Amino acid sequence: MSLRLQFLSAPVYALLQLPCVLPLIGKGQLMAEVTLAELAELGVEFPPTEDELPYDDGMPMESQRHAIQLQLLMDPLRLYWTDRHDVFVGGNMFVYFSLDQVRNQDFRGPDFFVALGVPKRERKSWVVWQEGKGPDVVIELLSDSTAARDKGEKKFIYQDRLRVPEYFWFDPFSGECVGFTLRDGVYVPIVMDAQERLFSQQLDLVLVQWEGIYQDLHARWLRWATVTGGLLPTPQEALEQEQQRAAEAQQQAIALEALLARYRERFGDIPQ
Image (tube, rainbow, N blue to C red; front, side, top):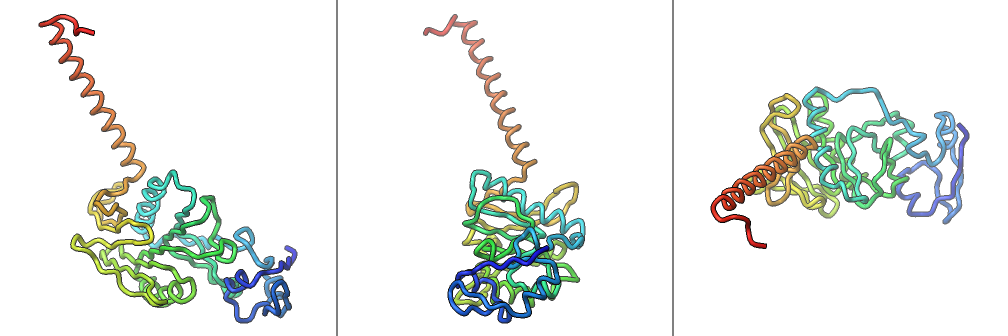
């Protein structure tokens, strides 16, 4: 793949957060350094987009419960925002904020994230310098193999590099659930309310733990809910609710027709 140089404005260059790549002499001026050669050897263009960057490492989620939990976070939110075209809900997707990730083959991203104020479209990965911003909300699903990194290294990346306004983590097996909000550049804990819910100011929704059966697996799940307490339904739940409303409406129509029939038997037709 050929190497392509593009002139960058200062704001876009700042997004790259690269201390050793292409020092900016002035707006619209570039001075190539060795990093360009390194990128060329890796077969990427500069600046690489989601089409040039790796987007799949072949690694599955840690467990079946982790995979189902991710789906339970993503699907109801996408359904809730069906009519919105300025939001993206991503899961198990690479997030690029530095070209050092290409050099170091460090492609892992958050388990779940939401970005606001962006076009709703399909993406292979999230590239900060292509999108112009990072995620607004991130959730990591803890496991024995990832907990230390999620609570340490990744937390500081989200705080110091990506500046993610809200960060949550949840352990699908132990139920541990913690949230942070970015205040003056530092994460401070989000305090649970009296109903043991974590409020997301960015999304104006709450995270609740719900015990029940989802995809034939009984567990304590993390779910989105409105501030007034209504769970955001999954597509299957929404279909069942609609079918129930239709059945109730049909029963009401049948009852009304029976009542009218009794009236006609006693008093004749209803006057027009």
